[in-house]
Length: 254
Image 1 (cartoon, one colour):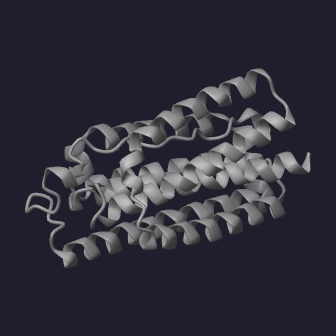
Image 2 (tube, rainbow, N blue to C red):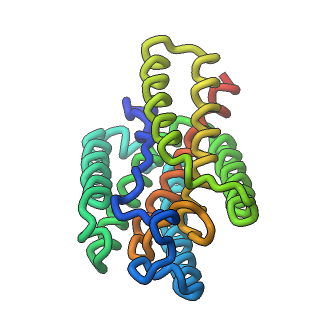
């Protein structure tokens, strides 16, 4: 665990919203508004705009934890802050996942997303403070390169990843069970295997969520109203990928 007994922030992925559009049931109809290319492109720009703001906040907070020893010391001396951040993270995540009216209506959806981002960034900062500065930097660099490459792949490939959402969700559950086993039977090999599988899984999730946002000829897509949901899932994919890569680098060092 990170210094001061802080466990690493949990790795989650939200299931698709209940109103997810199915191409086989009339994809691109007026209800979803994705038949208009301009609407779809506006939706994509909005999602990536929000995502860039989230990433910017997270990078700033993680950098503060990584390079400012005073911040690390203060947080270690006040472990209650970690629990407060965890509560806010869970509360806002559950609200955004379960309350469609909140998730779709501004400004409440953006307020909840902002609180979630701050809380998750704080938890991530606590986790990264246990690693060397160069490991955090390399993990961030690798995550950036992989994310850009996977995004380009998602836009270019003819393979439809939106059809495997159920398989990916089961894989997340299996990964969580494997993570519990790793806690019971710790070891370098177990950690490396677990982290490698996690990095692979969330790499696929980046492609999946990107195609869910794109619409087009893919089997499933997200309604244009769900820009906060799309931003949240892509953000969590990137954060989880970063955490697993960082864990691999840390375990390799040990």
